[in-house]
Image (cartoon, rainbow, N blue to C red; front, top):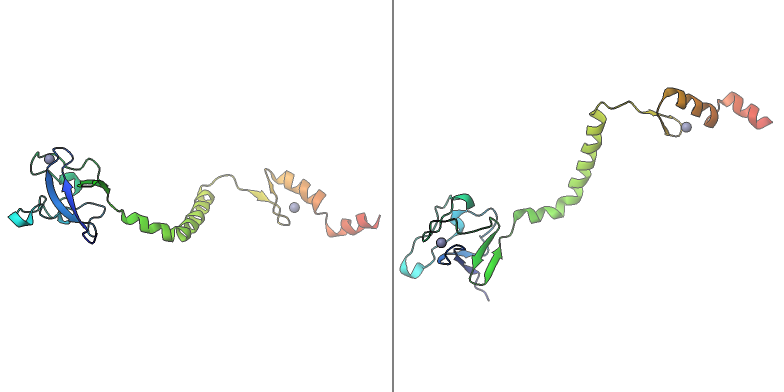
Length: 151
Ligand SMILES: [Zn+2]
Ligand SMILES: [Zn+2]
């Protein structure tokens, strides 16, 4: 069970085209991650070391050997290539906070109607007149307040 070498097969013609180490095989796929399919007989690696998934061609059928850029066919079936993005989930929390901040800023810079809010309680109003009415009713000026209370 210590063997981490995968036998890689062409998904089009089914030929064994390479071997790959589970530890180095990762997304995005690179030609250099695929090793000789038969080191005993001195077969060369199937792809150019710098080849991307797009450029990979099966040495036998000359088609792209992998239907998906995120999975390869091995002797044990489809092997999902680990994505480095998975690591991001750890730092997601702080990222989400940043995103929220940015979003708020954006909507503010959008130049939408200026919001009229009560400086006392923070309630929002559609017009200045409504705010004035609110101030009159909810936050009576200190003078009239005592007068009202007095009664
Ligand atoms: Zn093939
Ligand atoms: Zn208010």
